[in-house]
Length: 47
Image (tube, rainbow, N blue to C red; front, side, top):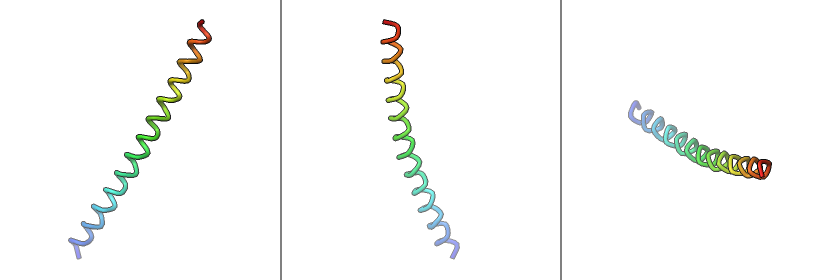
């Protein structure tokens, strides 16, 4: 009983970790895109 509960917990934890890593990658690429567009706007404004 205890062993199966620990197994289920490990599966849940790995699923949560995978979910968070995918979201972090998406957020990171989105953030880089925003920064690039902002620097482009600032460069056009300065020029």
